[in-house]
Image (cartoon, rainbow, N blue to C red; front, side):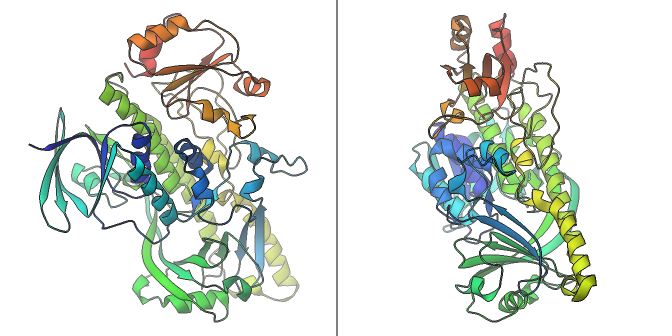
Length: 541
């Protein structure tokens, strides 16, 4: 008889492990498989977004992540340069993570400090995945199996039957799951076998990623410590990411037409952009291609796509991994509701209607950031030209580069997404605010992220939300009838009174319902007159 499991997750990258972690936190039994023998040790994404950190905060791994990469007391500096032996063209400096709770009224950073308990956390994807794996393996409801490949699957109305092959013994194990989740990357074999197409822009540029250690790297140039350098000279075009206090880096070098990544001398490429020789230990190199593609479907029956299987990004802005993690948080509670029986027949359909527009929005924004960066990577020696003409050229370019700060400071994109028109969100008739990639508007409008506010020392209002639905009461009211209806439907509802004037002002209405994925489902000053119909709408029934 085949092994029975509610959820099978194919792929143990950052998105697959995040989905497994969410199921582990929810005590939903799941199996996560990975064809490789272990995690990918090559760092790829470098920024864990503030929104992603809010999810990780629920699992208690946020502190480990803030300690894993660039030290939390280091300023977050970003430089656009001709090269590391050339001219500075633009510079942005953000405060260190440790100052996130401080309110600076004398500069423009006050808003970004109060939007979330976090800014971007700079940590290599390899570090993130190791921390996620430790958490996943600590959860009794989750089983992890490396060196295990999905070789065949067949779905029916009752589930998906999967054949899993051990990459060590070549033995075949048959597993029957209720749902199969494809977290198997941009070249997803599951997506291909389902015949799901991709729409958007492909092959924007090709890169080779060089992961290296160079203990004296920062003493070889005049710019000092930075999270990212963007060398713009076409001979060195790409970006250099710092993974710690200044010892290990990744140089993403853009390849020329017809150039093979295997022909690049990694050490020589680093020394060329640096303009000198130094001790360099090349750890690994990997090629990658920038895309802006989104799957035309996010599921086929009981099989769902998440992460790179659903959308392929350029890395500009740091949206790829973070969009994928938000996919999983949206999907996990809906799958749990379906398994436990309180989810309605339309609930799982809302995964596509809510997340597909965000996939299109975020890949388009990342591509726009890339196009802007790529445009200024066509210059050559004029970037370092001497004399008045060179100074004038650089001043003009610096003004143009200021518009690229959304590459770094992009909370509007990361926090400001919304599920406008969602069938499981009850609108309140208010006007949709502008969707600005740079600036986030904290708002408790249905379909938007539940906004963060500190309600006591070290405690965010986000910390008060349950794993199910949370009804926030900012004024006393009798919710007994609503709670009774929820109990009879097995609908998970917690009711919490919030006695905080600033929070009440931020959330505006006396009652606000927060979904399991930290999104606003409904708000009003009056309780629903038909509580069963109200709850049916929210659970997709």
